[in-house]
Length: 75
Image (cartoon, rainbow, N blue to C red; front, side):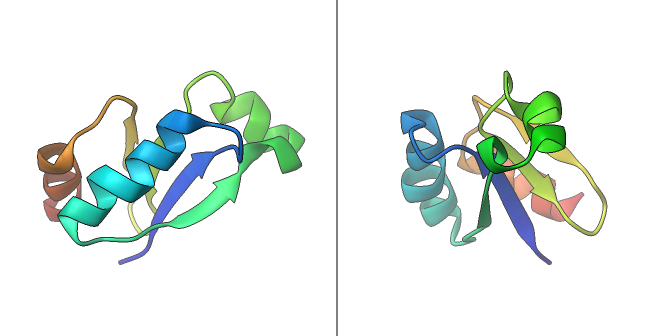
């Protein structure tokens, strides 16, 4: 199962999500910078970081914790 973390390179919350929450859950995510795509920026720009399951499209908006990531993985 592939997880995608939508964010920007200057987002400290995105770094926190990847380095602390996802690392604690043992599930790295592909990082996509929404600033590089107008459509993604429109969709996620005010919500980042957003974690998305690629297979189901289920999403978690920040703030999320390890428990929420594990629940997303089980969904």
